[in-house]
Image 1 (cartoon, rainbow, N blue to C red):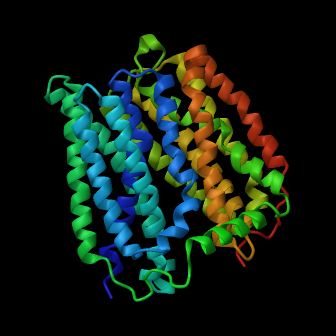
Image 2 (spheres, one colour):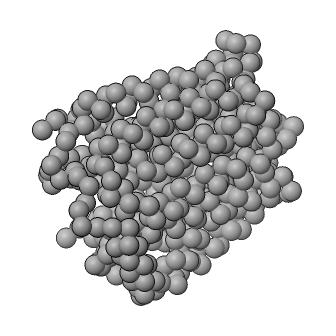
Image 3 (cartoon, rainbow, N blue to C red):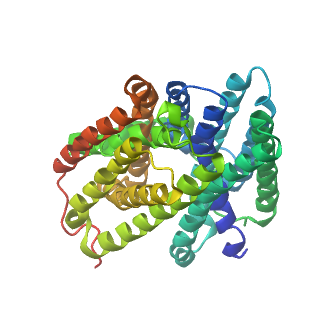
Length: 420
């Protein structure tokens, strides 16, 4: 049996990088290449779609090949997609080309997620699964810091070295990430264990999968509080869905457009490093307190935490501070609150999924989770361009009321989540 330390950290680091590239690095790339905020948020929000429809094709992965095969194949495909983005950036068809390869990356990444999470349970003993759950989360967070922070800062430094040649600098960066993924592919091709249980499932066909899925769907929509539960899944993060992409664009947009005008290096440090650390610490604290006292007791503090700190963007948009310390404090505060408040969302998905089909139901819940970010993102940039950053952030604060309303509809067992 291979030592889990040799593959668990790198597997979840590899899981995080393409997601960050599609959801965050693409924003900075397109902003620097001259797209409008409306175009950026519309195009990149559609890239959530593979995670929305992931439950539809996840059962088919078990029909052919092993999860190990899917992992290594998707890593090779993701590396090729990074190379495709790098190749098309300097061309005349850069928008169509990069979007095409970002779509390939997104679908490959979602498939990699399915395979990696399934393989984790097959490749480790029960004890090791529990032991490494924190390790895999930590290295996923490292991937976020590396992607949003280090890689964006490298792109900025390359632009300095090559005298502000933006297309050449970004192309070099994506070729570098391609090389990293090829190295990860080679490493995992060698080091991933080959558990006997990792084999195509026998006795199942496309028709049985479709029949099972329809049955799962029926039971999902027959649960108690289905209306309140789905509303919560879709609308709890409405303010964040509006804010997520526009806030990044606000940080890097020029001051004459109402933005803070951060360089890629400054953005990489503020949002990609300080922000991710705040998000991680907030999530850890949220898990600790909910694990001690249960979800019901901490629901309202978490609702406040995921909404009220958004007001820092109203402050930043009106005051327009130039010192990085103030900006860092604001972003840390907002992301810490989001991490703390997001705990309630994740715990409710587990709560709603309880029962006979909990794994399948949880997969459907995560589809609603991705949809909750995709839908607001589609029109967030256009709304911002219509009203400006200042009014947009006030509108976000108004939409915080939606989070409070949806949370008020829930009925939660007071003992759920408590330490027994």
